[in-house]
Each structure stands twice: as C-alpha cells, then as structure tokens.
Amino acid sequence: MARKKTPTDDVLKQLRAFGLAYPGAHTKSPWPGHLDLAVKDKTFAYLSLEGEPLHISCKLPNTSAVALMLPFCKPTAYGLGKAGWVSASFEHDAADVDMLKAWVDESYRAQAPKTLVKQIGVAGSPPPAKSKANASRKPKAKKTKSKPSANKR
Image (cartoon, rainbow, N blue to C red; front, side, top):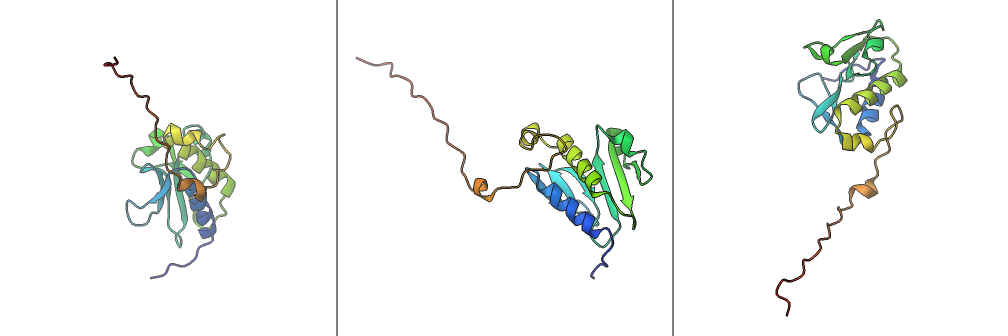
C-alpha cells in the first residue's frame, strides 16, 4: 500500500542522501519502519520512512545538551540518551535541514572508524562527493625486498 506524501518527506530524502555521501555509509533496516544510516554496520542516524512524520535520532557527543533544549527533542529511548543520543520529531513542522545535517555529520564522526573520519576533513563541512573513478582502482601491491642469499660463493 502506497504511503501518503508528508510535508517532511523532502527533508528526509535530503538527510538520507547527505548521510550516504560519507565514506563507507550505507542504509540499514534493522526493523520495520526504519531505513537508517550506518557506517561499518554501526548506525549513526535512525530515520523514519517517507510517508511518515520525520523522526531522527543521532549521537551528539558535543552538542546533545544544546539540542535537548529544543522543544522537539528528547533523549533517545532504550538508554541511548545516556550515551549522547538525541531524538527529534517533526509531525508537520518545518525542520531545519542545515541543523539536522550538522547532527548527521556529528553522529557520523562519533560512530565511524577514525580512518574514515580522516577522509572527510573539517567538522561541519559537507562530505566529499564519491568518485566512481577511484572506486574501481585496485590497491597497489606491496613491494618486498628480497633477502640476499646466504650461500654466495
């Protein structure tokens, strides 16, 4: 059954596309009603589906205290709030896309391996565009030095 389009669907699409631009990012659907963003199978943004009110949960180790002052935010359930996870809900309200993108960025940096975080540069900047040219390159083989023979005459 097709879902009705909601006023927040465009925001949700923007957030999902933004999050998927990060190195190693992929979607993950651990249970019905979610199409979340993950890196190395660690979720960094829990997102609702299109056709439903916008709900997002992100790990905000640096800005959770400020985010929790907003009227549409609360600590994430299941004990995740204690670890800095914040949930926001927008029934029909306009959501600040730039703020939510900053949350996705902060959450990605908190959950991703350091090697991937190094690839994206300064916090708050948009992730680099994925290059298809680099994706097909094979890693260079390591050169090994041959040891001199012990039986030289």
